Length: 266
Ligand code: COA
Image 1: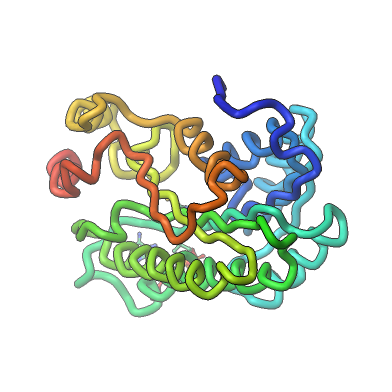
Image 2 (image 1 turned 180 degrees about the vertical axis):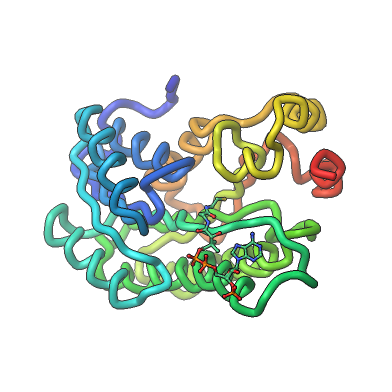
């Protein structure tokens, strides 16, 4: 990754990433680790956790992890306790764990809706809340991972729209309450990021990916590194006056609107 951030920017820092065992979140863990951070990750599945830790360590990153479901308060609290015991207080917490599947609202069970809201919204709250007393303050920060569905209604995504809208207002509420405690809270909205499970589900063919890229003002799909660069900025002292912000990393997708994506999917 070509980075504007100097090597060692995060040396001695502890960065915790929920859902950091795959996808964009794993890339964020790698990017913070490459910048010198000690990295803790949690994920639901033991095999993915093991593979992620092997990969991080192979890159020379000091990494640790625990299996935990972000919906489970006790598991999250325990995972954070262990992380802090091993790597010290938290400098940056990335809340990236999320769940998604396309389904029409009229075909969705109450439990299906609840599952996504619980993973995305309650899970984000749980990780933030369990981190609160464990932050290295002042100067600590939270980066919540939102989605374009937080502000754009997308068909087949009512559950995700509702959950991510909650994540964005939770971000701002926590920023308001926790600023005086020396904790900044921001969110990133990744747009169409290539090589992710989510985009592969929404645009499964090369043709649909090309069509989508052509609709973006910046004329391409994003990369995981595009998101990582912004996360490295938000977590650093360069962003010390930035809190409660929701930063789109989407090639201008929000300017086009979710309807464009729907055309590709239909
Ligand atoms: N369409 C409609 N309903 C669905 C569904 C689908 N494609 N997938 C799951 N559900 C419903 C289930 O039917 C169930 O409801 P029910 O009890 O009324 O039948 C409910 O969601 C919970 O399903 P379950 O599989 O038990 O949930 P889980 O907690 O194990 O899994 C999910 C979480 C639902 C988010 C699952 O889609 C998942 O694990 N996805 C993979 C990870 C992921 O989404 N990553 C994010 C990429 S952006």
